[in-house]
Amino acid sequence: MNNQEFSLYLRKGIYYVQFKDPVTGMPGIQRSTKKKNQKDAYRVVIEWMSNGFSKDEEAATQSIQNDITINSVVQIIKSKKLSETQLDTLLIALKSAKYLESALIANTSSSARLIEYQEMFWDFDKSPYIKEKLLHGQRIGRYHALDCQHRISYWKEFFGTELRIGEVTRKHIRDFSLWIAEKQVGGNRGKKFKKELPKKRISHATINGIMNAGCLPIKWAYLHDEIPADPTKGLMRFSGEARKRGILTESEAQRLFNVEWNDERAKLGSKLSMTSGLRSGEILALRREDIGEDRIYVRHSWSVQDGLKGTKTSKERIAPLIPSIREELLALADSNPHGPDGFIFYGLLPDKPMVGNIFLDEFYAALDKIGITKEERKERGLCFHSWRHYFTAQLAAKLDARIVQHATGHATTEMLEHYANHELEGQLESLNKAADEVFRNVISFKKKAG
Image: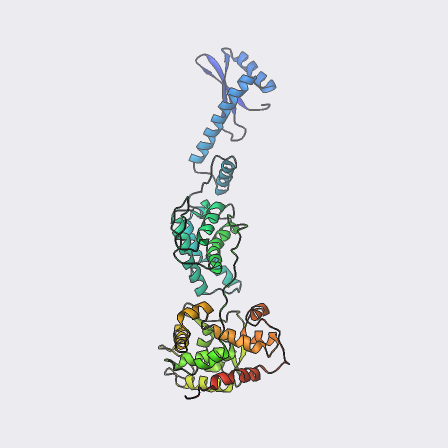
């Protein structure tokens, strides 16, 4: 108590002392000196300042000091002059001392509702995260953002709409991850949240996608100092064998192109994907200028959400083009009612290609015609993308993996080997020559009568 400021005042004939709070600068400890004479009162105060209070006096004084200090803090809070940093310091101290489990500062990012924050985070036109990625030249599409927004519906189903992002704890994340992992219909209800389980079986890859869609906004909030801690830190991913897309046999491919298709554009799209490895979006984006003498210049992709955009890897590439397919592509371009320079796989409007679902629907219809039922198709994982894997598997037996990788646009040879898991053999040959040799019989195969 040395050098502490104080003042004496008289109340009902007795002198009292009031010390100034050294922390807040506000009036602090008050005590009676029990003296009626001012000089005697000074002597008592000097004794206290030199030697301290007795044990009984210390305990009583500490209680008084606490009350006065708390009152001072309360008055400061009521004045609304505390900065956000000071409020954070106060809340952290209360949490550390276990007086509070959670608390938020009003009108700050941490008080934003979790679901609203997550949905805004994936709004392609408003998200600061997406804006930053695009400014740094990183690729993110509207379709991906929209897909992530849809996945937030699982978070909304579990947490409702009132939980604030600054209130989210590690236990919240863990409870949600265990709930979403229960893929069976029905099952136990959550003890705390009492939410119904999802009604559909969900793959491990989808579970991880749902977790990422919701956790990334929370991580972003932490990295940008909008919340004090990252409750997603150290979260474990769900593991499981990814479902592989199926590959048709050569006999099945031959039979597919011998049945009648309702839309010849869809049939040609399947032929093109099988012989060049192009994705459906890359096929839809093709224009006459992309068709070379013996190659396709894969420069763009098309999606409903993004329109014409770059390829999946953001890199242009060259894909093989066998003569018969080239002839069909140019003939289709010439038949475009909007003009020969528009999209080869034209649609109803001049600035848009045909609807991509036609590729898939017609592919499924053709599979049904050759006896591959819906159940077998699902069991084998057959889809339009299967043509791309058919192309990879067929050419991987004839060419160096890097040549096939460049043609398909796979980012790594690991993805290539996922669909062609056997030793590559044979000498390096022209990609076009190999494609023509491999796929000529499939396209020109004619079923014998009788």
